[in-house]
Length: 133
Picture 1: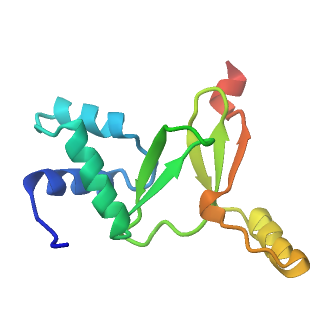
Picture 2: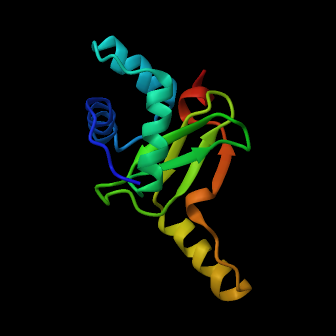
Picture 3: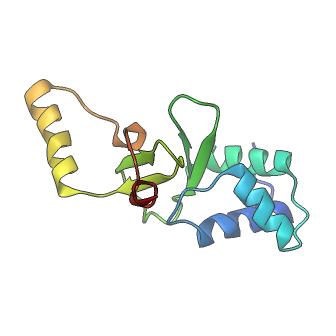
């Protein structure tokens, strides 16, 4: 399939790059782009994200088996495999790089012969902001 360079794809890709350190939903992408005057529709964003995911530039995270998901730009190679924490109150998804979790992952691999896919591993709990409320 040819790679079409459209203005919408460039705008979406640039936005994802600028927000590459976090996870973002389609609604957030559409809202922020439309508020900045970009005429990008929801279906265009979905198509672009699907193409970028297939090309390996974007990771898609599906939360708790629900239909809701978020995306993260990884084309710059800065985001490597890591575990995730998800707040059960506000739904925030946090990527975490932690030596203790890396050790646990290695333990599971060597002692139990099982390879954990850390990209799909989510630990559920309550984030600090929600805990303080």
